[in-house]
Length: 528
Image (cartoon, rainbow, N blue to C red; front, side, top):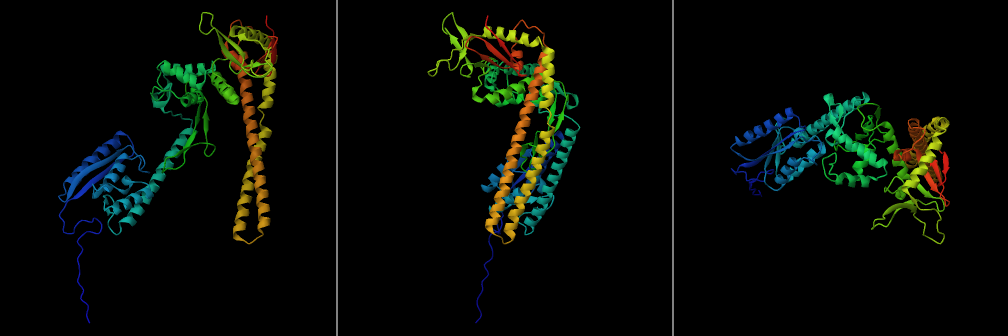
């Protein structure tokens, strides 16, 4: 018996969900983007907006919504593309039926972003038309074509990124220095991009270095700069310690440049990483005019290292902080104020633990003038044999800075680590692909791991020893440079010499002070 079949025709478009007989206009928006801020691209950007406005409005079956735009934004990801994200949000909210854009590469150069966005829009009945490729995403071939075109666009972006990276590294290798001048205190862009000193800003840089060498902490320097109303490199009113420390540690202020401190890990995310040896670095000496002398820059680096070793023990109240040591308990002297509220107010220095515990320290309380005069005596005694001191320092430097054996050991340890890592990988692979005694496997694996860990620990120790010796060599170099240029007899206090020459001053109960200089020389001075 024949069955009756009645055809019920479709009444809605399977993609747009609009009635098939509907004469309703499709709500159409356009997306325009250029990836740089240059004037040529800006012209293209304006032309895209005008073109798509007219392109949509001339169609009787289309209703113009808006041209969404992004200017000076890369298409490799969608995180910072405000116009793009606004358009997608409006489309998902039901305000747009069709999006028109120039090409797949204008929409996104990241295959994943492109497909995810297209599929999300498709789920909400929103179509995308890529004019250059003539692709409608509701077409049966649309998604395949988009995948192919997006992949090509992504590879083009990768190629561009690699070319840019190559160009940057070529400039680095040629010693060409660039700076973020808008956020770099002390320099302006000169002719040909060469840095030139901005004297007004350079004075601020010199002040920061001077205050640090006078004993102030980064936090103290921030407060001082804000009290004077001096803006940060970025033009803000609030200074933070990180900004001050970056200025104090940036070799560009002494006229040199370390290039490629960071590198781009992924061309899609634009994520950058501190260069820890993954890519080459280039150190250019005398690349541009210096604001800070090389000697003062080295003094600051030595002082930073000294404060880091002291940790919380360091106080930025004075140049005496963390250098005056109690001969009884070994603790630091601290600044105290006598008669703080009357006319007899006086600042003195005393052992911080003098009245703590049962055994009281018998070391005396000192005023700044006494310490300064006794340091001048010690300095003059040291300078009486300056030539011999310099010769002794040079001998020490020749020993300390000879890294021949240490470098050979470091190279050997790095090679050992690579070999053992390979053996561990091979051991794991063999266990996964062939049947063997798990007890023997664990013994072999643990033995290799111990060997690896031992090599890593020794490498850390060797690198730490090298760094310590480099610091010691720098201190000796600063010491030699300081006493070479100074008079044999000093009559007035110079706090920079106190900082650059002196390691510590130990105060004894009988008021003697033993001054230990950075070359290891100890000179004892008695109170008058």
